[in-house]
Length: 332
Image (cartoon, rainbow, N blue to C red):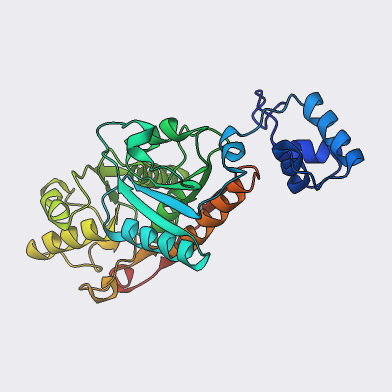
């Protein structure tokens, strides 16, 4: 079949269902060999399967006859800030749906074998991504177990479900806000280069500046830590009047450096962070930032995985963050 980009793509359950005039659940039952489908309906579905050259999801088929109620979470990112909130929201949602949970970590420097990643007898896997190398884990899992990837889906197969927060949109909201309050000499304090979220936030900032006709400037950060935000201060241009920091900890460090060097936030430099970490409203001054919908991410990820386990096609969600305006961008 031809995809939206013009290339060929493999037919999925929804395509077969449309061709046969039945629900995706009915197609799934036929593929699994269930006996509850009427003979004439089964024949119509089988004809559609042949016409579309449908190749079934081997992972869904292998688990269709027996389920354990266990979902395995692979954490491929350090658990701090927003990633810790996402992890907790996934666990809470799995518990609310009656699943049992197993958990393991995965190194970002090597890609382990399947048996090292996934214990026996799980119904599906949630991969908590974020680091650039976390996408590589999916190649080990793909086709062997239903999997949902939480994070930017760079290079993922279409039949791997995913949930992500629109980091580029968040960066655009931050940058547009700085421009709207009259700041034109803008700097982005970047997150670490091996994180996909940092790439998205940087690119969103650059695009927003380009759209506004502003020359963007950026300073590279080595980590997400406040200490590196402070250390980056010596590289900041003296004439800047607005900064978008890639996370709240970097913003905190940068604000401390500015204060130590006699520059007032927000009068001289307006500051926007990202994450709305606990306590951001108590920074000095309280920090304007982007709040990420971590609870919604967990609920969406588990719902997508449950659909995959039931033989439904993979779904992809991109959720918007919310701009929270506080005193760090008020006044001039």
